[in-house]
Amino acid sequence: MNNQYARREVFCRNTCHELKRFWEREIGKQTCYRESEEHRLGRSALRRLREEWKQRLETKLRLRNNPDETEKRANVG
Image 1 (cartoon, rainbow, N blue to C red):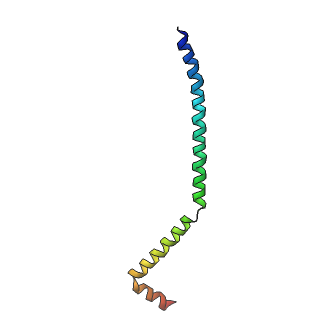
Image 2: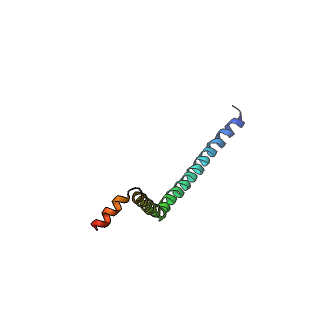
Image 3: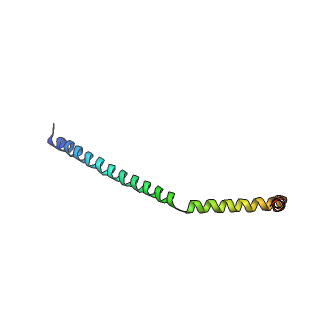
């Protein structure tokens, strides 16, 4: 067997482990970033505000489409 091939084998083995460690670290960094971003978005008030505006718009549309229902509510209250 030629020494040149043996050296490549050893080099490849070491390089493979280094590459594996490198990509495992990169994947770990990306996972941490994704989790922190999800956590940040979960704490954001934007979702709550959107939900409130959605409810307001639905209420306005409902009142606009059913004016008789608003009169009933006013008479009862």
